[in-house]
Image 1 (cartoon, rainbow, N blue to C red):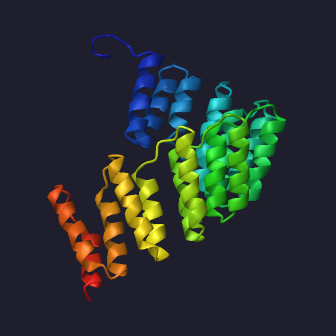
Image 2 (image 1 turned 135 degrees about the vertical axis):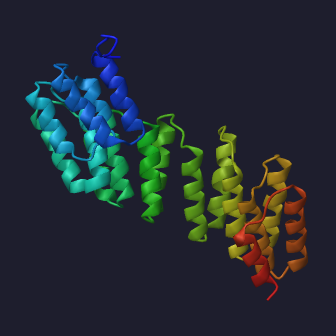
Image 3 (image 1 turned 180 degrees about the vertical axis):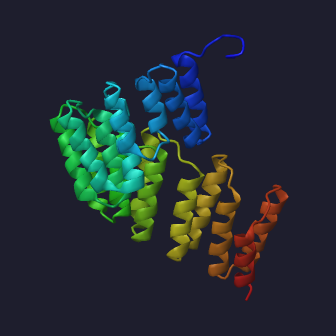
Length: 295
């Protein structure tokens, strides 16, 4: 390119930075930024926002931006905070949030959602709740992502009461939980042996327009088998097939395991043959279930 006396501009360099970051070649991406400066092409916000998504030395890059009088914006800080939570934990990430405020960059809805996400992943539900309260106080409305994240967090923490409070709040605001969150709650209810509630939740959900998937049925089937309610498990299996929800090997394994546990080995073999007739390949789990079932 240079041999043809066509010199790269900022956009050309930015494309290179983006490409290297996408490949996770961070050293090369950083070298391109250095090359820009060496060729008197000043990196802009887009350059730094791109490299932030993969760069680990966050503080160094922020300082570099300021030395070039390119001030980090909300996108930059949000990317930094997200990466900091992932690599250094919540304490360091919170320092970045405070730095962000100190430099006059106001946290937005995305900032709050990032914090909620990571606090929930770390099991710090009190902190996540505080962020949610601050989010509302700052004038931002929690969205589906916020609520789904909080509900999943409460379920993993074993706090079904708070999870249901969040669900009710979503309903009042006309927001819908996603299928993943619905399945998480169903799973937690099954673990707690609250099978009546676990079954009623998807039934109510379908009346509100939710579409249940294989995971929903598989979770309920497993819950019924574990509580020795074989007939209800088989009824759900039939209902799933009536709705033309195609079971995967995982769901077949669930029902084969349940039938073996219930000493219904003949039916377990029937389900195994059905699995094979459909052209599905058995996995290691299938083999182990059958071996243990007949021993």
